Image 1 (cartoon, rainbow, N blue to C red):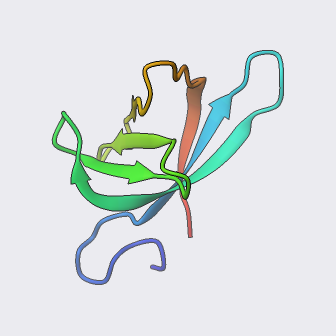
Image 2 (cartoon, rainbow, N blue to C red):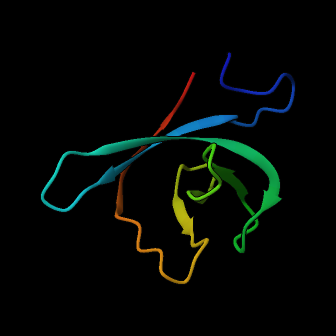
Length: 82
């Protein structure tokens, strides 16, 4: 599968769908880093490094705040990205 590292069995990319208050949903592509979060799961980040999320094998998402002023919208869905 193109979304997994060869032999490692880890998802490389996810699409996070955020529910914008009163607006359209926003989809952000995140890719796996070599770091782990407080729950011991891999951290995924977008190209800018602003959106960071710890994602478990069961696709449970915990947003990692990158600024004290960051208030990301609710994650509505998480999808494996090809």
